[in-house]
Length: 474
Ligand code: SF4
Ligand code: SF4
Image (cartoon, rainbow, N blue to C red; front, side, top):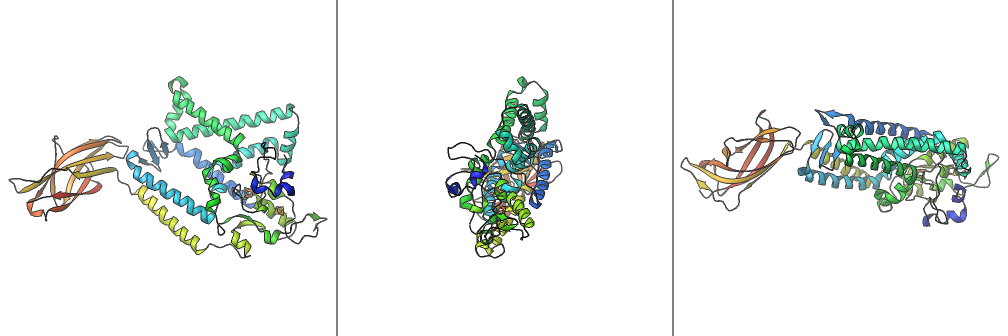
């Protein structure tokens, strides 16, 4: 079905009852959007090149022999901006995920689908990589439609083979890069350079990811945003009348009418019904029907309409970033008090995440008094309590650590160990049992608050400060 049917009145009126890529018979409608051109497309291209450069270069960056970014779900080791996170960091991870979801929801309520249109990997790869290759090989919308209709002759076979060949190569590149994020570049290079029999899991992983990316960008395409993406599906409950969306100013545009010899045919609105906004839409919708779940906020229709407005001598912005309320009330879009408040919350959340990520300690220590053990009074005038502790080394280095009681001053004696220094390998967790001796005079009442310092035995640096309670009847 061609896009002409999309502008058919009868079909158009049913736009909320069907998705744009399915025709009346339930068959897939291949969307061949017209190549966008304009201000926003230019900015989006710059943003995309930056994001693609970051995506493809990040696995090559190593700091002190370790990846700068790695999300090794298999070994449950995550490195974010050079900071390593082990399963013991699940609290930070959980809080970060929670903050992230709140962030996404609040962000969407205010700014709509800015994420989808500008930085979502699906949009960036689809519109800025795969689609551009398609335009390069098969031409713009009209040539693509012509190619689809023509029989399988030499030209069509050559173009399709060339296009899908390049698509596969790029999918392989993305698949390998994706794998490098999961297991690191060095391991990925081993998968590439050594026989598959030595790395079956890795080899199948790379093939699987590459195949998936090829399938998504050559076949699934806009359906990923409309049907599969949970964020896309949530739009209906996230946006409201004050949300900034790509919107058609129906007050200014309607009643629409075609231009006849440079003049509109009896219509008073600014929309000349050229349907260019529909033709450029990668999800095949008509934004003039109002905000729709399928709209990924790609801004292509803004650029298309601005070019038309310029040609017909009318002000740009018939389709623009605006809230429904600003269009209904005919006032410029502005952020409401609620939006400012949400933005402030977002900033606070970002601050919390930043503090959690960058303020975390190298070790994680939990100290608890051993239950059921009584305090003991010694001849030298000290009182002791028995404690249990666990220390996790959350760094890539082997650490030599010491536990000290600094408030009030006291002495630590490990049970069954001659030295008070423990050696912890990277990611190692050690359990220990130890006595804390305090001078009887420094004990204030039945319960005394203890402050421990976990020190690096080599540098003397304080890695962490932990608290516990000391009980005494003396
Ligand atoms: S591009 Fe602008 S003028 Fe043309 S149909 Fe769309 S809204 Fe109307
Ligand atoms: S309606 Fe406009 S902004 Fe929305 S997806 Fe289509 S072209 Fe992009």
